[in-house]
Image 1: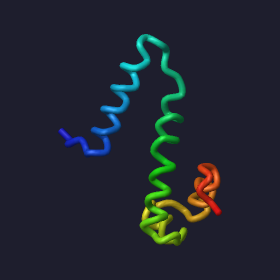
Image 2 (image 1 turned 120 degrees about the horizontal axis):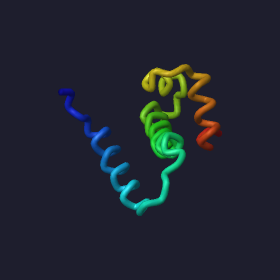
Image 3 (image 1 turned 180 degrees about the vertical axis):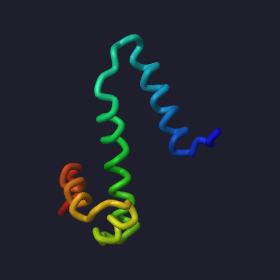
Image 4 (image 1 turned 30 degrees about the vertical axis):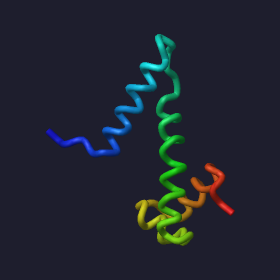
Length: 79
């Protein structure tokens, strides 16, 4: 059995709480909700770690620099 990472465990706790808080309501667009909640702080944190260097940030994230720029714009993180 693969051990769950701390991030995955945190995600599982958050989703458990989300479903509990729904109190019987039907969930919708969970995938988009989770991506938006995770992606923006991830991009911001990595960009800070890379001291604003988008090329380095893209390398750390393992994505293309143009993809990073697009995501930064989508989340209002670009200058």
